[in-house]
Image (cartoon, rainbow over all chains, first blue to last red; front, side, top):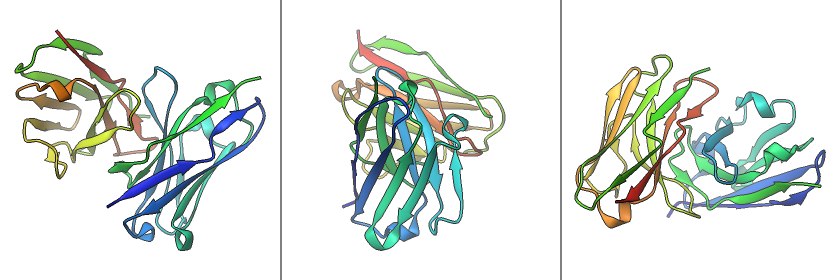
Length: 115
Length: 107
């Protein structure tokens, strides 16, 4: 069974940093592109970033370029999102998903940016 | 960037109704589109990929159609468990983008 479990969310002040993790099980992580999607409270879904199987290609939405970094460790079956220079508008539930087309999703981890 | 316009933003329907939701892309995306169902407090679940392919385990009352710029999700006979918010996602070109969502409510 495919499982994705996010962790690392929490409350952080504007300008701060967080590192989200996504633990994958039930499949071979190295075979798949992986994706981060977020959802601000009461709002729609926003694609954030994705990363190729070997980490050689990464793509980001403009609003996070230069602040967020997606990475992966296939040996540890894990996906990461390093979030720096956080802003109030980054407050959201963050989901990891398998594949470019977001085939399977984790349950999400909540990031709150507030002073 | 490709904008995805989803309509309607909400609808009220009764059990047994046929429901149609539309996503329009600001430029052609071939059939690189998925549909997702999201219930309150839960992660989205993919229903359709490649515009018209049913995800394994998803009931056959769900169907998708379209190509290029106009896409449709149809629920042939709405069931109580189908009351949820539905989203489309284009994965043709970066940045990938979602539609604004359609909330399907009980009439």
